[in-house]
Length: 434
Image (cartoon, rainbow, N blue to C red; front, side, top):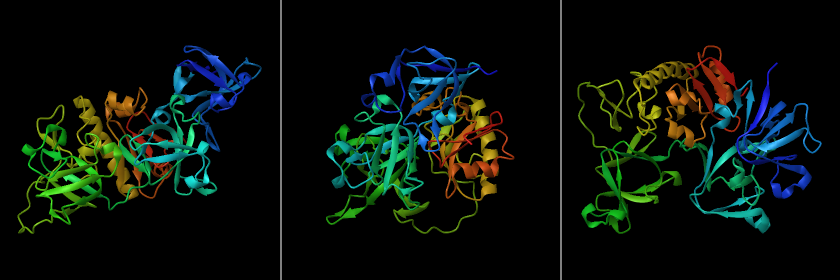
């Protein structure tokens, strides 16, 4: 017989309904201290209608509280254990998407034009605000949400006006997962700035020596930034040999700003991997040589050679060291982690070849600090370079998982809160989320 236990990890309140405390009568709630545990018959974090507004629903075994045996508790305040093994949150359930507000806007209780809502149904929010989410959606069985994102805030401490669930216009916000945008879907023709050598961004297009330190920011070779727009001249003429750039996503702002200038010999603008500015100059054909990489250079434990972020992990393969290391911001700490990345890249290439569509890597290696920042499980395979979260254009996470399930030698999981992503790892063989 499995011993099922609900363990309270933070002082909290049990609720008869998964609603803000302000909407509950005193008999519908019960304060519970951290460290308390209860034997339970069952638990759930969602049903056919979606999540429970950021709560776990549980049924007590052989006892009741206030005369009831079924209650709700905020998901961030408890964990579920089966025979002393934590089963909730698990890796797929604990990793959190983040909603970013990309321009000043209003959150709404219903997905309507603001003019059709009462003041009590609106909450102003500033550009740059972010929320960890329990879940998000852009449609339900009745259709889409009138070009809005519906989202449920993860932590009760962050609820707005006592509510977890809100809507926001999808052109004013975006959802990211471990630093990568997962909704709205990105335009494949988005402009990308690639920094070709260590340089500085400038607030004005003049010599660096003419600017105070506050008007400059150091940027490393290999940096990639998605752009809202770029320009090399305006009505008054060129920008003194500089590119003017406007960064698309507020999460990528440099020193708090989204608009900068960069010397045009130190960077270039690409669209769908084709250079669009400065215009490439024709060069005479040259004999084949070793590949020349323009990405960020770095070293890997256990290796003496230099690696680059645009270098394939497996020669001729589809996946790069930049994807595995988050553009060289997450260098593996040991040679064993490097070997795990190589092993996963080989297996992932087989999946890529089978499905025949590009894979977008959302998350690969995550050192402990990065794993904690995204709410990753303490035993996550990402910590060892053995796990990857991917999206495949035109397919749901479930469809990708089903395509590789029979032969994939490791873990295959789908996310209840991010349906477009599938988790694949080369750890023990197991599945979840189905």
